Length: 273
Image: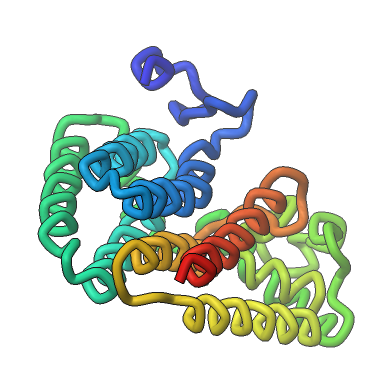
């Protein structure tokens, strides 16, 4: 909050706790959701339901921080995650519907308040609308076009992992921009590993999602433990969003660690049963 007040981040984006990478919003979203679910489950299992306000407060703080982080993709994914979380909780834990409704109303009011009072959020929202109105001529649109054309040139072998920048030549691909990677999980995988690679990725994610659904519980504390990882999993696999590279350094570690948490935590509820 102090960094946001001083406007010291790159392009007015938050970096704490990172030294230079402005991705605190994505970090909080992908790691915070499973951890909040684990905290709520622990409190319910130990009979300390009166302390459930702690993970609820943590969720509110997480939402507010993501909103002011300056990361448009993280804000959109957060809204998706909140919708999934509320839906699964209402279905899995009927007793929690009043708490879900109360928390949802509070979070909605917070989002409206921040959007109405914070110029940075308004500027980011306006920029998002402008870019979406002419998406294919933006940096991201040009990257997606270039990646698609690289796949057409190498439909079986791809250009190789972390070789996108070397293979991406705007003059040859008839685009106006290239970068280290295409900034989308599936398009990145398609361009670098091609048809066999993307098929195996989709198969792996399908198996992960199926496993998560099979481990879900629809009662009590175990239902809570299922809802938060499900929301995190949807965030991780949602295709229509700008993402970091699934191969490179800390973004890859964050992505796969988040998937691991989402798959592992429901097992705790099953073992408890």
